[in-house]
Each structure stands twice: as structure tokens, then as C-alpha cells.
Image (cartoon, rainbow, N blue to C red; front, side, top):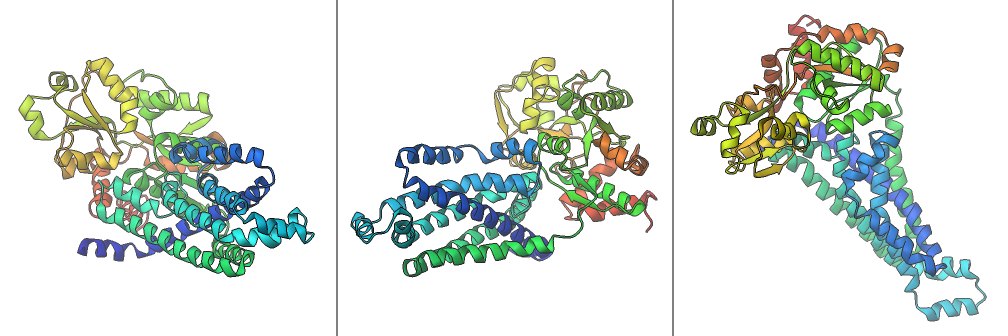
Length: 508
């Protein structure tokens, strides 16, 4: 409990910011869902033949995994709040649509006949009789939609939309840090409960005031979400630098930001923790971000879908640089020194017990061990697919998991081996050993700034500024910086600034 209180005290500012972002995204999505679903539900009560098919379509949207929806939207809308709101709106439509339709249909037929007998046409009967009586049912649908949206909003952090999901993802990335996960999960649950209580109040009031309570609720919600737009109406940043999940990308993008703002008048915005490689690369292609640190080996194997022509770091970089320029019209600046290559890691005890030194040695225990691999590693040729082909290793039991979970699973004995990166901080913390790769399955993975050529043409000074990091940062330095962020809870910005000052790239 004391650890949680400490984490809460240290991250109060971040917590309040993410709560506000979470509330803003949720309310905007709810308002749009209401504007679409309520009128549509009312119209369908007049065209009952098409009502069930349309409601069924809305139901189908809720069966699509939210992560798949977000991934689908990135090429069209980029990253950030826009695709998140679109996805959340789609998820919130069904309860409101169904209750709007049902609420009107369940109004006592005798009352409808009486209204018709008084000379009311269909529209007047709807607005004067049916809608006021149906408002409690409609409000119940809005309540259900609100809870659904607030809960789903946590995953929007994967595409840079912010919200309490940022804290949850950070906790997962830090090896399932329960305090950080709770710091994001508890406020999300409390926010859902609070909003449900408020909407329950509007639902009760609607029994007396009918449609007036509905209008009042919409006005209040609009006022709540309007203020952040006014607050965030500052000048848009000149450059947006993104990063994948993890402390290492967060440190590197902070270095980029510090150097660029120190030597130019450009305003730089950071979008850290954008998720896996595919998400971030799609964001760069689409233009939602302008720069992100990518690895030479990843560029060749994943983006170019080639095999590394050499195991020499410089030759791999030249292959990646040329390929990204020709195939994607992107510029790959000079790489840093550290080689964050893939590695198969395990405890020293297991390695000694079975005399494991090389990846191929796993063949003799492949039926007796459990592997904890990330989804990316399991699906890549420069990963488990290549291990099967090159080393003829076919592990019987493989569990896929998020990067931040695997070291926790290894330390708890739930898995025996994991895929790791050479500069990961937990390599120090857990005193892990890595198996040799004599066949050079894993090519060099040197980090370097990747950007579109049009960005470099617009800001040519970026090449000289960011190339100052070329050839710098050793494996040991990167591991140490990751350790400071992951285990000493230092901010990526302070760690990045400290390194730049020590290297003479930034004045003290």
C-alpha cells in the first residue's frame, strides 16, 4: 500500500492529465453516438422492416476486436484521438440505438391511438407523447453505452490518444508493475461508476421532465468537453516525434526533441508508447508523426521484407537506408552505436543444467520447456520463424505475451526462455544469459532516426542535428539508461538530458 501511495504522489500531475484526457475522449464519443443512434432509432420505429437488419449491423461492430478496429483506422485517420473517437463511437452505438427503438415501440398503443384521435400527426405524436414516455429507456441505453466506452477507452492509448490506458500500458511495460497498473485501472473504474451515477440521475429526472432532461444532459456534456479544446488551441507543433512502447524509444525521442529545440526554433511534440512496429510505421506513412527511432534490422526484415545481405553493421545500415529510400521515400539517418538485437534469454541455472550455449542447443529440450515470446518475435523470420528454419528448433509450448510481461513470467518460473533485446534493463536486474547465434539469424539492430524525405526537405537542418547521435550510445550506456527509467523510476526526459550533457551535446 505504501508503494502505491508513493507512486500516486509522484505521478499526480500525469494522473490528472490522463483522467481529463480519458473523460474528454469518452464524452465526445458518447455525444457523437447519441447524435447518431437516437435519431436513427426514432426513424426506425417508422420503418420497422429495416429496423432489425440495421440494429444487427450495429451489433456486429461490437464483435470486432477493438485493437483490430484501431489498426484498420490508422491508414485513413492516423494516430491520436480521431481514430480512437471513431472506434469508440462505433462501440457505443448499439445500446443507444436498441433502447431508442425499443423505448418508442413499447409505448402503450392506447396512448398512441389517443394522440392520433386528437389530431396529432406522426411527428407530433413522436415528440409530444412517445419520446417523453420513452426517455427513461433511452437514458438507460445511454448509461450502458457510457460504461462500455469508458472501459474501452483504455486501449486507445496504444495509438497515442492518451487517457488512463497510458498508465496501464506503462505498468505492463515495466514488467507488470502492479502499482502503475492500478493507478490507471482504479480511476478508470471510478470514472465509469461516477458517470453512471450522474446518468442515472438524469434517467430518474427524465421520468418527470422527459426530453428536457435529455437536452440538458447533452449541453452539460458539450460544455465539459469544450474547455479542453480551448485549452489545447495553442500553436500546433512543427514536428511530431513518435516512439514504440518501452523506455528505450521514450529516451531516444526525448533526445531528439531536446537537440532539435536547442538548436532550432521548431516546436516538437512527443507521442511515446504508440505500440508495436506496425502501428508506429503506419503513423509515419500516414503523416501523423514525422520521425521515429527505428532499427536497421527491423527496416530490412519487417518493412522491406528482405534478408540481411551481411552481418556487418555498416553494410546492414546501407541496405536499410537504400531500401527505405527507394521503396518508401524515407530517409534513414546515421545509426547509433548500440546493437539492440534480438536474443534468446534464460536463467543461468537452466543454461548450466542442460549445457545450453547456442540457440540450436534448445533442440534437445524443445519438448520440455515453455517459451514466452512476444507476438512480433513469434511471427517474424528474424525471430521464432527463423529459429525453426535455421536451427530446426520446434518448441512444444509457446505462450505469446506483451514485452513487459515476459521477464515477469520468466522470473516467476511460468516460462523457461524468452525473446529479449540486448539493451533491455531486466537483463541486468535478473542476471540473464543469452544463447549464441552462430548462424547470424538476428541481423544488427542499430537505432537511427527514420523520417519521410519530404520532412527532411522541409527541415534540412534535422540531418546535421540528429546525426550528432550517430556512432554514440554503447550497449552498456543504453542498458544503464533503460535501467534508470525502468527500475529507478527516472523520467525519460531527465535521463536523455543527462546523457546529452555528459556527451557534450548539451550545455549543463
